[in-house]
Image (cartoon, rainbow over all chains, first blue to last red):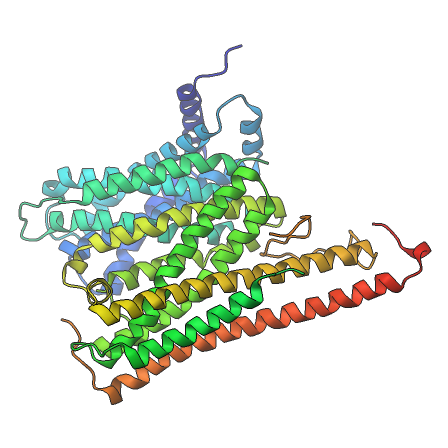
Length: 229
Length: 248
Length: 62
């Protein structure tokens, strides 16, 4: 019997996880709600009605990052508790396919959260028009989400089989995610300037692409070692 | 016994430290612009460089561990991170003191090396809790190595990215100081760098020796029947050399 | 934006504090390691003596 092709395996894994999520709604509603609630927290904490430029960029991205942290542990919990890792190891699939699958799942989760969070942000806190900023914003979202997904997939696997998984996941992820935050915040801030001016993304797309690329390769190479038992 | 060469190494390091201190305070001229406060850089910058190299070295040792599965590499990596963490604390403290003296605040965000350093320390501070949270020693070593490699790669990349951040477009004192030093100052700086490296290596060997002796002790006790295998095993974040035959 | 020269009497304490912090931290570490090491080595020599003094018959394997 031919071993399944890697792309088929990835697709199967992703579909399985998304189907599970659609059945149980364990993570996504919570992540979306968390994002909206965090915007409210920022309103009260910063005591501002409307934000623009650096402040808007910061509030948006910190919120998305924190929501992502919720997801990072969630995508592995089912595997850890129900023997999903063992099942995967027994199958003829190549091990790094699990990493690719988890990365894509996280990307999907982030996209869903952003579909909810961006309008909420525009309604609750944002001063300039979100619509005008959207083309540039999508680029930042794409590369930013990729960075979060890659690091999240690696650190999640690291943290889920430890005894302090809820703490270690965020603790280890956050320093690794700071460069991503620097990149996307730097890229987004001029897009959210009020009054709106033509904004240039500058070097940030390249920086983010390099960061994502390098850590993608590192995580891909190291993931094997996390699955060994 | 173990740690051969440790005594001459320690003496050499002590002499080097003394020589460096003398050079810093009696030979290097005072900086025209920053005055006496600049003397902190002979401490802060060399230690910072050595700390970061130590973290990267720990990552390389972790690569060796994953490739050879020899637990000695994991111990070497663990000790390297441990020593670098200690040096890192000194770097942050001295950096903070310098910031207070130069800017009036105990912390400044416009010094990229300091900020990058804080990020690196925040990351490596999770190393010990991570190890402690995994009971199985083999898995602990393996996961720790994955972490050490990821974090080791993070060190240089993080420094590059933080430097790019818009806040750091203004001229930076730290890099200016360590970059374009006139004659004597440069000589003293390199001396300080060599001393810091020597100190790191000495402390690393020192702790490795302590671990070897402790492991040998445990082995002997087991052989003599003083410790049985089913004695309650204390959970530990530190890798041990008990199962290993020979010395580093 | 660059710091201007602090005179010796104000900068002195800062420089001293930084170097002292360095020495204190390193010395504390060395002291802890040294005490662990001497304790271990003492126990090691004791055990080695014990082994040499024990009669052969009661030497037990693991």
